[in-house]
Each structure stands twice: as structure tokens, then as C-alpha cells.
Figure 1 (cartoon, rainbow, N blue to C red):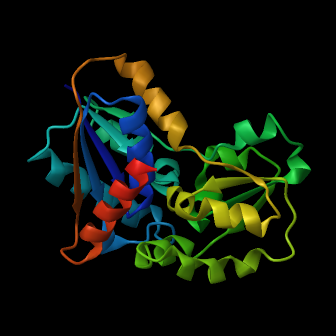
Figure 2 (figure 1 turned 180 degrees about the vertical axis):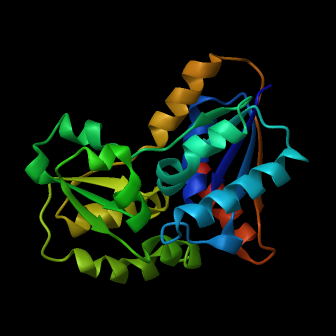
Length: 239
């Protein structure tokens, strides 16, 4: 059974994990949520690289991962290449905004991307696209802070008032938790996110197996966030 490590700063990793378990239910998964250093979206490249390399080294002492999934658009765009070189014997899978999926269905004038500042400034996918982008500076943290009461997050979407789009690309895995509210903020826009593509990439690498998966979720800070993550994971697993 392949050991698959997923890393994010918080609840966004759960959304990717859910798709991986659904599509590849035969891996030993560990989701590591680095809530002690959240949010990632406003950190510099050097800060993120140091944090991530330290996390990978520490995790490797108790979970000998074969594959690393950066369940975070910001990590993928800013530090994945350096981490690949440092851990050259491991396979890395990144998470990218599903821009191409949106552009396959809609004209670019009708597409808008919501993401962190770090993703907007560093993602190769976004740099190559002449489409509208909005940096949602505090949304990821607000989602994590209110994971057990996501109604509290909707007020943060008021910044979208007046924006028009037929398709919205979520450039942060956290935003999936409020994708319905985001769609409504744009009058029922189609929402695209990248977590399913990550899971499908993993399946292409591994094929299929009859072995049942294992799932662990850990956090870097010992507080009440882990129970919230577990409740969110269990609820979404039943949906």
C-alpha cells in the first residue's frame, strides 16, 4: 500500500483528501494541516520553503511517504520544484487552478479566478491566462476559523458584489467549503476547482487495488482545530 502525504495549512487539504479517498480508496493517507503557520497565502517564498522542507523532514521520521500531494495552490506554485529536488526519490503532485476546464466551456471574459495573493502572483497557470483575478486575502483563514459554522464566512463574500462572471475558478482548496455561496454571489455561476484532477493524477500513477485505504489527519498546532477538521471530513464523507 502506497503511503500518500497531503500537506496544506488547514481545511483545504480535507477537500483534496476526500477526492483522493473517493477515487483511490487503496492508499495509506496522512493529511498534515500546518495550522501553526496558517495562512500560507500571504507568506513569502523563502518562508514557505523553509516551513515546508522542515515539515517534510519531520513527517518522514514517522510516516515514510512515497507520494507528496501539495493540497494547496500556493505551495504548488511557490515551492514544489525546490521540494522535488530536495526529496528527489519521492513523487510530488501539485494542485493547480482549474482554469483550462473553465475556458473549455466559457469565454475568458466570463471567467474569474478567486485565489490567494501568493497563487495569483506565482502560479504558472494563472500567469499565462489573461483573465480576471481577485485576491481573497483573509478568506482561507476565515473558513478555518469557522469550519463548524460556515454561515459566518458569507459576509466575507460581500467583496464580490458587483462582479459578474458565468464561471468561477477556485484557486485555493479552502474555498471549496463555501463553493455554493460563491456560486450564489455570482448569480449561480459554475464553480471549478482542482481537487478532483489531483485525485485522478494519483490514480493514473497507481492504478487500482482491492486494499482498503487508511486515513490519518494531523495538525502542527495542538488546539481545537483537529476535532473541527475531523468533523468536517466525516460530514463531507457522508454527503
